[in-house]
Length: 182
Image 1: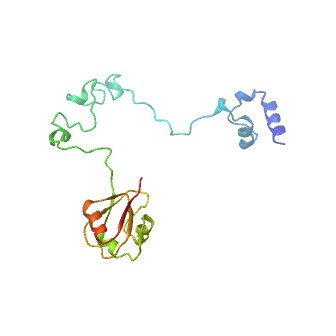
Image 2 (image 1 turned 90 degrees about the vertical axis):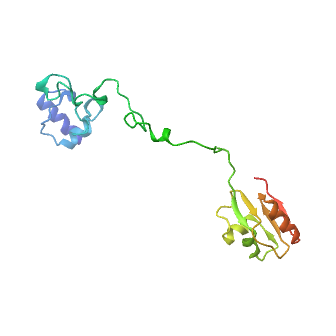
């Protein structure tokens, strides 16, 4: 039905479909549905802003200094500023002294002290139990047991690392340390 109406309007106007005038007697939706293609697509109004044309004499409004103001670094050609540039002043990153070294490959542990482990009334303390009791946040990350506090009962503790003091205190209480390989 739609195609017949469109063909009739074209026949009345005697115009090829590609050069169809904007004002037709056929409904606009039907014409758009039939003739929409790459040949007649247009960007929406206001989506492209016209480029500022500069350096075309005083009558253009952008003549003489070509919107750059007068004199100084920003008025010159080839001006390039970088992140942290402070107008020729010594940049902050170069003023601050650099000392020490930070390794990219540092191993970070979640720390658990013996004071926290003494509160648990289990014979085997695993990572799942530590997570359940809230002593560690993530059981997939490395855990290290430190020697602050005392153990009174013999327990088996599973962790990725133990400090010397923690290992001695656990063995003195009759317990065992099991190192988990990550």
